[in-house]
Length: 52
Image (cartoon, rainbow, N blue to C red):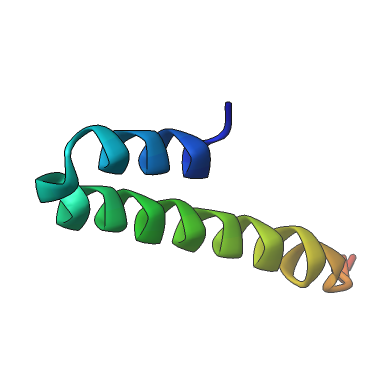
């Protein structure tokens, strides 16, 4: 069961906890976005090594 399914299950069990569940999903999406950016952009920047 992934995080989105867990959050949906928590919401179905307790609809009053929607704000907490939504915040968890937002945080998870932000982390995934950061990992994607690091993996696909930062890691591909060429590094130059200068020697004397």
